[in-house]
Image (tube, rainbow, N blue to C red; front, side, top):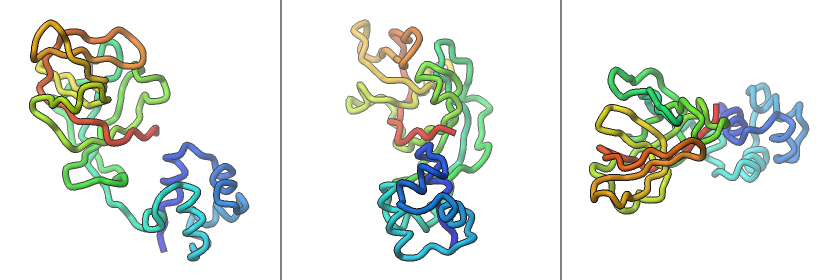
Length: 189
């Protein structure tokens, strides 16, 4: 029986030792379970579900994949564009994925160095921006073709203008947004 222990461990940023400790088993036993050298039992499935805070089905079920459609900027001067992007590859789907869910890879450090090269999952694209996206971290498409991951704020300069901010770097002020989608999940790689 296949399992998702490696993916779950990686998503949590855990070592084999940390995952084993969280499950209450030895490091060696965890590694053998992860590699499929030992079969998961009802007991170990339950331990893994509790440790990783997922359903038992998520420990053993394959969620499938979603398209990796390109790169998004998360730097002060983003230069990654929507034109000519993928799908390039397929990546592991995340809990709550649907047939509209896609992933993009962050390039830049305005969200912090830990998120450079992270995968960002989203699916509910809004044209135009809707009020529930204000103050939220979103993937945004700008009229010049840039696609960025930023927190959206309203601008006082115009009804259809917004400020876009990251953790670091200067915000992008008074810019129109063609489309936006709330970030569903970010997974460091």
